[in-house]
Length: 94
Image (cartoon, rainbow, N blue to C red; front, side, top):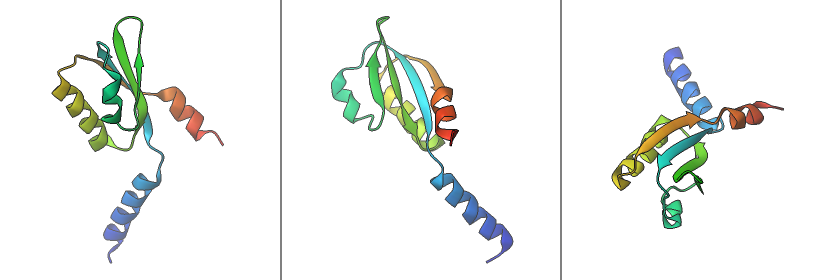
């Protein structure tokens, strides 16, 4: 195995071993609770302003795009997508 090949394998292993990033996805309207199973590890919160916030771990960019595809398929209006910095800071503390 070459050094480049070994470095590539190690990079993939590090990516898989790190903790998933937390994301907050804010959408217009209230999603019916029946959709919570479809969004797997995400928590759905109905907000008083008529919006829904999905919060939870997202393992990588492909998984994030998968979540966004599901929201698109439902025809909901996307308001924002943000990494949950507070959760990230808490995870990095010893």
